[in-house]
Amino acid sequence: MDGQCSLETQAGLLWSEKSGKSPIASYMNQNYERIFVSADLTLDAKREAFFRSCLECHFANAEIFWSGVKGKSDRSIREETRECDAIVVLFMGYSLKRYSQNLMPLLGLKKPLLGLNPDGDFFEMDPFKVHSILLGAKLEQLFWSGVGRVLHLLQRV
Amino acid sequence: MRWLSFGTFQEHDVHAPLVFKLNSRLCDFEASQDFNGLGTFSYALSLQGQEVDELRTIPLRHSKLRRILSRGLYPALIHNQELRNSILVENRKELRSQIEDFEYDAFFTRELFALDEETMSYLKSKIPLRVLWLSFTPYEAPLSIPDKVLEGFTHIYIVDSGGVEGLRQKGLNAFHLPFAMSDFQSPVQKVKRRYKLGFAGTIYAGRLGMLKELAQAGVDYQFWTGSYDASMEMMAPELKAFYGGRAFSHRMLEVLSQCEMIFNPIHRAYMQGLPDNVLNFRLFESLSVGSLPVCESKPALEELFSSQEIPSYSSPEELLSHIQYFSSRSQELKERVQEAHNKCMQEHLYSHRMARILNQVEMSKGF
Image (cartoon, rainbow over all chains, first blue to last red; front, top):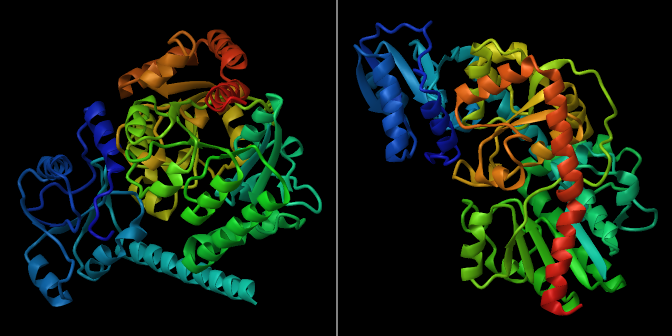
């Protein structure tokens, strides 16, 4: 996502508030000490507070580094995440392909990679699977864009 | 009056069994029985004694392979801006040709973004009445609104009553008009109810949480959507067992008809999470196939139906409580559906809505 916070997610926030449930996936390791949060999003105050509470609630004993990867070199990302036990990527929607730029630099870091979705639910991200989703989306985009180009040219002829 | 009802190529059209008139640009809406597309609006107008031509600028419309070929064309359009733009230009040319060839008293469309300033100005010079019925409220939805196009309509109808005043303040002749049930008979005949609960529609923020909650509560349900792709599966792998696949157009009515109850969160996607007060197509589609919609609570719902007719929820607990209640009361469920359906037949068909449009149009223009 290009740093834009979709207002669509307000509905998700509302639901989480209504349900009153703790947005915690119990199968994940809650004993991490340092968490790197990749938050290249423009968040309104309510949404940011919601994400922060999810993180603080789930990783109660961890230090949380609220940061991002946008515009950073691979080397500086590696440096920033060196001491962290896990990386959490924030999502404002349900489509990974929109977050390609945020995700790609994190896939080779060999750290547990988690996502936090707009409903406040954590999920595990297998880097290989994420890679294949992003690659598949790119190929699909290229293919249909190419088909579109051919049709456009045919139309002009 | 003679109406031109206009629509462009939409995702729905890829799946809809549309019939086009030979040697004409027009769609035969009566033969198409397009239950949840433009045809249902055209048909409703015609039921009010209007002469209606339905122009749908759909590529390949006379090809016998249209539905197959358009499955490839639609994603190409989505991914290629140039193609999209050139097809829009073609659409506008077709619209002009149709207007040049025939004389119309009134124009009806549901698509604000298909028109540009130039086409609107042409329409204004040729057709005295121009009616727009939108599924969102301009200036409230986070969309870039082509003001000059919007201003070219003599009557604007929106589904959210809260937005009318704002539009009027901008000098627009705006009215509230909620969705309704199609006058076409549902193409789905009586089928076996295989599921207690179902959901069919797009999954965006909030809805995934609800579906997960239902699964966690042990509710046996099935959902159909185009949204549950590899990304969403990664976010909610536990929902895979409940996923029934994709369902559009008549197939969507079929899957709705397989469920006794339909879980119905109400929100227009155009609003992107901003508050709204609307009804949705799914509510009426569910009733048309004899399934009980359990709806998200909205004042707009209460304006049309009592809680005795349509149950509503405003919390997950309330939703689960309704599901539990009706799970063991099949007869009561059937009676509720029948009551709500009867009410639709008497008051909430699109022909009723069109009667209101015609009334207002006639009052303002003296036709």
